[in-house]
Image (cartoon, rainbow, N blue to C red; front, side):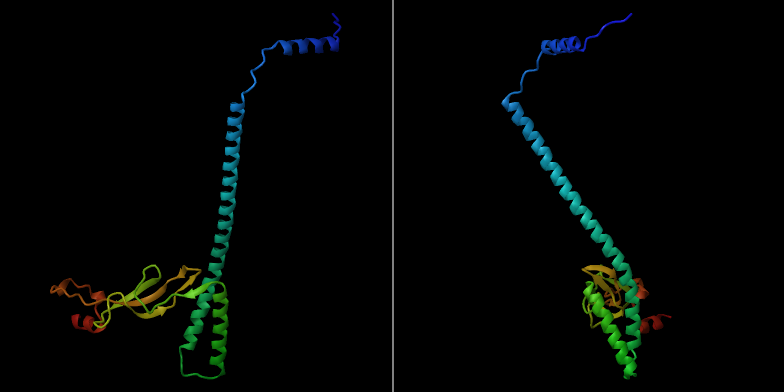
Length: 195
C-alpha cells in the first residue's frame, strides 16, 4: 500500500494543532521582575564564589612556594651554624677569619632578603619560638629567663622555621619540702651534693 504524503498538507495539520493547543498565560510584570532578581542574585553569588576561589588558589600557590623556599633555607641555616662555629674561635685573626666573616655576612644578607630573621634570645622564654634544652638554678634571675642560647633560631616572614635552642633559669623551689624538688632543676653543684 502506497500512500501519498503531501509535505504541505502535513505542515498545515501541525500548524492547526499548535494553534489549537491551550496557550500558557503570559507572565506578569511582577513575575518577570522576580525571576530577573533571582537570576541576578545567582549571578552575584557565582561571581563572589569565583573571586573567593581565585584568592584561595593564589594564597595556596604562595604557601607552597614559601614551604619550598623554607626547605632550602633550613639547609642554608646549617651552613650558617658552621660559619658561627668556625668564627667562635677568637684566637685566629688572620685573613682566613676575615674571609669567613665576609662569607657569613653575604649568606646572612641573602637570608634577610628572603625574609629570614633571627629569633631573639635576650628575653623570657617563648615556647612558640624557643626550645628548652635544659634548666639551671640561678637565684639572681627570674623564672624562664633565657640564660644561654645553644643554637640560634630563625623565622621567615614571622613564621618559625627553626626554634632557638636555649637554657633557661628555674628558681629554686621555695617550699620547705625539698624532697619533692625535681633534680633536673638543680644546678650541677647541687646534683653533686645529692650523689
